[in-house]
Length: 606
Image (tube, rainbow, N blue to C red; front, side, top):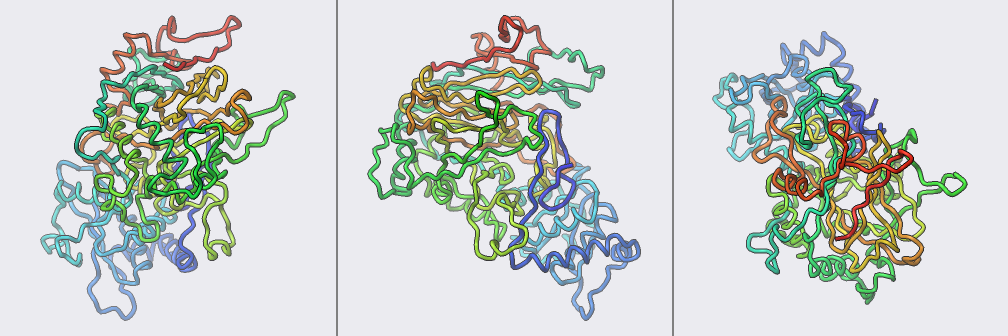
């Protein structure tokens, strides 16, 4: 059982394709920790007592000495128990009296489940969600933040009679406010006008499309394969066949953009100028220590050791040391965090309009990503999946003194403090790395993201899809001599795919695909690093996000558009590997060695 950061059970979903992961506990701001501990006990005691909890729902228990009328929270499709717990949580947090009314849902969203709060700070709303998680094991309830632009103080619902229904437009506004407050659907920058140099998507080439890691799923087929016949072990029509995808693109990042991005990472250019005069063309010198730090560690999502670990020739386990990545203050200049975790607001959105204040090369690459994936809405991964595991991390003195230290403490928005969805890598010879995944919505810890979307397998129909975009930045890379491929693994069969680096090559991958970095070979030299940038992305279906209770259905969001996939298939650039072949005749689709063991599928440079 995965323990979420708010101690709840709503992030409990898991799939057979992902390993278990113990998620860290939330660290609240030190000024609120003691008080919240008292509030939790007070709420849990009240909710577990039917006399107090149900009486609070029926009579609206008055706070001692309070003469003001109760503040009102409106809900859709909430049970009496949930409403009682919500009122109790709000009274504990705000010190004011509250009442709750369940409104009639609009016909467009008959199953919508949410609560509308007015005049409540974002963090207080999330503290209420945390208390509900600990007190109840009920289905998901979104606690949203109403827009106060209408001037109402929230003491009475619209209409003033307490029985007005919420219309569909208002429900959509609540969902959009929740997304905006917590940075859940932050689009990549795409300034108006043409791309410098006249780049257009037709200049890009899909060099390989790889499907692997097949598994039966109880939902609509994800449409990635040609046939729809059921797998041999699925005896029900309700089962569908799901596969992960890797798409290898060349020509998306041309030479001028590649050079500008590498110069950015090695000199800081204008956005974070370094004091040294390091020549960005001298790639054999390694990362610039003024901008880079050895603090990046692989996400340890294999606590049971079921995956292959690095070992020496005699089979002894080898240590996995931190690798190079950009210093946190530098990474935040590339892409500021979407949420002020101390105040719970998307404060960076206005400053980021049209890419203001961000390096031009980064914004231009994001423009091209959006153009390449124009069939869906391309956004940054939300905070729970943008977290970058770093060794140590920034701490203030109050955090140092806390009894329960945790280097990977999680904020209320689900992120590691101050993490951003852009990561830089620079592996060097001799380093060791673990098999891992970048993220999985089925393992998301309770947070504003799960309040809205719940827990679900990646590529579920009609749901946001988590994807990583890996961009190789070296000017030259002798892949045959220097190695350092990005390796992907099909866990059920052990089949492997190796994508060789090439200047400007872009690799799109599902975040729940098992993969690992590989260090350069000895021929590359001790200091030469394989530079890359990774964008953690979330692909949304076009159109507004439905409220909880109304999500799912329709077609899965595609990483490769249907015309692009057909072209790759016709050009024999589509490869179905390992367990994904169980839905297809594997002839011509995968390769095996003479001994029957899977042979690696190698995607060479163009």
